[in-house]
Length: 419
Ligand SMILES: N=CN[C@@H](CCC(=O)O)C(=O)O
Ligand SMILES: [Zn+2]
Image (cartoon, rainbow, N blue to C red):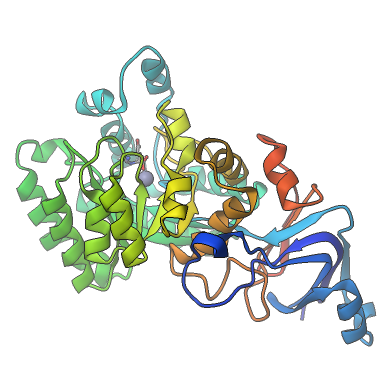
């Protein structure tokens, strides 16, 4: 039996507690459930009580001496950050492409010449499971150090059965080996592999007939994602793949309208995707369709910055009623970062989210984008004790002092893993 943990005198405790079970939109994204001089009690990895220090002191008067006490004055306490969109399991590295883009090549130029996703696919096909495991472990350590306690993870650097399964099995193993919760997504439709060049529809058939059934049978993924983009998968092909995944219980997600407007946001609403990702070039019709369907916009401002593109219209989407989540998009090409705090800063600076909206987008709404809002994303009684102690006094300061890691300590399921 581990000792209870009592975090007390937090200058500000942002609980993110709120009404309802779905993602938050519009004004609800600004309601952080703030408690001044806040306090929480953790036992057996679960949050048992939340309130002011005074309230919890009285309530636990008889047990206070049994607890590990964390003095949080002059600090902010929040739920663990959730990253709902990553490609964190991969082999190799692509720093040369960074230089090529600075010299003028575009993301699609590089990919069409056999680099980009194809380059990582070659290196991931070659890597043995142990290498992938080890490299991903160190990325997950870095996520944890930045206050991230749950990470969605996509396959998609195999685009053949063997390597897709290898990536997904590595994710499964990491769930046992690393403190971070990893939520797996199948993304066999990340690009058309060279062996199917010119035979795109045959690749879609192969994915549907040969890959999906095994991924489902081995219970290796919860979501099914597609790169719906001009020159990659058309909306029609994407729809086929996502509808087929639904037959196996895989929830659709879509990389939509990243490089060009292509009807991806509209498709996300139509197929009942839980989220649409990127959306830099989403149309007004697409944004309204998403608002109507309740599709979460998972926005990736670090990717836009890294590709030197204008960020998605986050402000406009929130005003239109779309629930917004944010993510690092951690991948070796367009966003090699694990810093969700930086992504929150960028959400404010380049997408004009308010600091409160950015925090909601990185916690509660991010949890909704991977169906985990009943477990994490807010500090409420009965939820998993994934908690971050920040060396700032309030949530505004967290966004204001940008590009710096303010994490002082992190608890994962009630166990201190950082600090
Ligand atoms: N845009 C498509 N897929 C990834 C990038 C993958 C890569 O470049 O390796 C993304 O979400 O940014
Ligand atoms: Zn992605």
